[in-house]
Amino acid sequence: MTIYTTLLGEKFQQLHPKLQHRYALPLDQEFFATGVMSQIKNGGRLLSPFYCLTSKANFLFPESGQEIPFSIANRCAMNQDGEVEVAWERTFHFQNAERKFNARMTVDLEKKLVKDFLGDIPFFYSDLHFDVTKEGFLIITSGVQKVMLGKAGFTLPKILRGRVTVLEGYDDQKDVYTIHVSIYNAVLGRVMMYAGEFKESVH
Image (cartoon, rainbow, N blue to C red; front, side):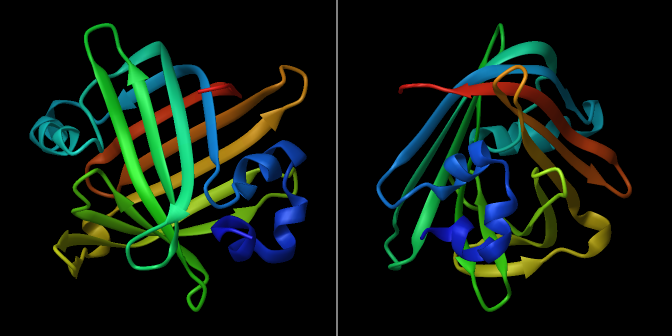
């Protein structure tokens, strides 16, 4: 078993079968998919300096748009610390730019959460809590967040955190995965939102 099956335990079987396939992700295997984001929204000009910084690390980015083609790749492997790790690479193909939103995830079984290191230069960290809805969707919410300087982490106060909510499902009629991601700050409002559909494909 890998990190998501281990973390969710019996709840994993309550996921839609297609989500079970997507998140089982055995060691040294890859899940690749392509699709379209019907909508991508950022938080506006006030956050432009922040987006400029994070986009250089393949994290958040300043572009917004509709009907944006994208791809997603997940790879499961052992990292240098001997932990099972899942790499996430999301690529968004805007008309004038290609943006990536990358992350690496491991699991903390004691705390029953996923440890999410965001960007290619992992200067931002978030606890993630995984659960399953009665409809068989996967819902992910954020908890403690830190700014990382090397291996040292400085916990952000709640007022500075981006409250993350991810809802991933499967539409049997369309035969597509569905995704809705919201990152919201109590003071600044929306930091980023995107929603769309995708299908598994061969890389």
